[in-house]
Length: 531
Image (cartoon, rainbow, N blue to C red):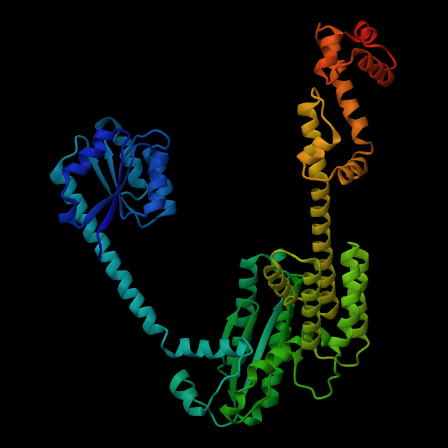
């Protein structure tokens, strides 16, 4: 164990120095990691150095000792705290004890008492660290036990990985003793809108589904091994050959019971993929990829059912379909049209619907590819993260319709975001130009000067300004100057010739003519009417 880190906090610098000088820190196996003279500074130091022990006065500016203790306990619950209190503030010490602080000292600080307290805390921290080390050893051992190994096996299957298995491997590595008969993998999938339900509700629903499945199987003497991960639950059954139809019926009944959850949670749907029943462990090698393909078939067949292997799938010509989509989505992005983007996704969906019996996994891959093409066209900055989020959303789609609706919304969202960004990029230099005019209207500013200030060419700036504001730069500048002239005429006694200069005119005659053209009265008349 290295030196324990100690932070001292007291609004009196001499008290901090006294505590530092009072103790032989090296002998105790401790070191001063920081000192602070107010509550806010103390909390910053604690967050920065993560001390083992905090010694703090009960009364400090910024954050009181009690407030500091509360924040420290929330941010770093393992920190041990010693509070220093005067007799007049003993009631504060009592409050601190309620926050879980077990050590306090009264001023003036006694060296022996402080040393004894620090030694007690050192012992306590040492015991805790030893307990944590022992705990880690136990955890590492537990990871090697049968439950961990079974979980690892099922997770590999869940991730669609190939696994190399024999009866000996199942027995020796995973603690699974096979009965004579069949081995059958299965995968349960829950589809729902996580944002609508909330993460905690999702966990509760999956636990409930697992409970239903476990109960139905155990009632018939079947003891599955199962592993849940997010919205998926994968399992392995071992039963006698004569039970095969019974097993299918049991799983179907369990699925029907899960579907009753829809009465409470409208958007929840369950489906189950049932892998091929095999006689030898070696035949489970492709169970993971098979289940991944099968569970996608709910997109085509619908949810709330058992999905099993078929032989008569039609081939979805994904590359051919994408060729036209690429042309259409590229054009849609070029013109920033959500309607055209919609049409490109609808085209894909229509072509998919014309297929007699496509694979769900092929449809999913097609939609992923479309999203990939779209994000490449639109040049999203955080493309990888966007695609990952979209894939997670697609995993919760229980039908082809929902899948393509997700694609359309995905396209629409990012086209609108790009549109907004472009609009902001267009408006931003004009906004800066207007601010510049407001700050410099009293100077002989020109279009060239302002366009240079906002980083645009004079020609492009002139066109953009008129398009954005509905009037040209020169007219806008005149209007700003005239409005300022009106204010000065109404609210000051400055001579008209002075006002003329203040709003950017050197020629009084030109100013008067411009003002009269703008307001239909001369400056002197305007002052008489409104001043």
